[in-house]
Image (cartoon, rainbow, N blue to C red):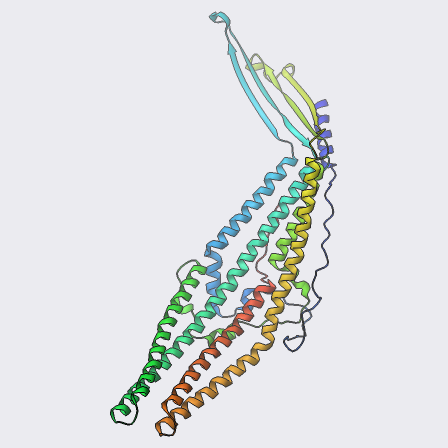
Length: 467
């Protein structure tokens, strides 16, 4: 009965332990309450950003199929998930220290003094609690809380990896479409240059054109052929990157034939939302859990300033005959307590509290910095989104004008009105304008992907709370 009371008292004291960790108070986000507005920004009327998933932003079934494959096979994501599993297991390891450790021991022996054959045997079976520390000041509870928050931070970090994987794959998919367009431009330019070389050679043979015209036409052809080789290399590298992100072979039918297939498949996101949406970005969440873990570490350090009290208990049976091992007369029990306190440590424990408090201050600054960085990234993406449509229209108009100029310059050259140099300049301008238009269209798509990434709003990246 006394042993039972001792165990109950130990359990009660453990549960009644107080915490010396300060209460976590999150600061007011150090950013404005709304996104910038003005000529460079589009302020939509939505009151809140809708819950997003990558399938609602990247609507092309081919890209969705590649994304699903990447989420299943990407090795970086597997590493991140393994780190989460390890962090969750560490929480259980630390939490186990809050509970008594029960053990059992059995023994048997035989002794025969003098070899007479009249020896005696002894048997024992004991179980008990070994060195159970009473968590009077919350040291163990705060250590568990710190590891739990670190595990949650690790889980948020894995969602950052997941979000980056989705966005990087979309960027690579769009870049492949753009490079297909650039290859087509180079091939068209090379075809026109070959025809120009043929006609110029004929004019040279007929004594109408100088040799410089032929050489200039050959320069245009060589430049276009070099561009073709470069774009084929770029396409191969795009495909290699997609294969790496997906984590396996890629079905080429899932790749876009041109950027015109990509642009409508990636939906633009609304901009008129509260900046507090950034508080659910994975990197911001990770920083918040880091702050909470640092706060709990303060409680651990403070608890080390106080005495440590441990209890032990033992109950069991001992007998010199196996048959009478469980008789009432063979039962015994014992209980004990142990308290330790450091009298002098040259200020080491107090310095430990100061270290944990400084680390908490650093975590607080890191949390605020993560919010400010997130705000800047989203604001930058919105600034581009606010003007990119005008740039795309201007690029398209420039290409149209350059094409008309090239047609007219070629006709004037063939009619003997202008020199071949004017026609070459017009062809170079058209080539540059077409490439610039592709670059602007790719920037439009990349900005939409960047906004998805910076808002961190992939709703399908849910998490389970470590226990």
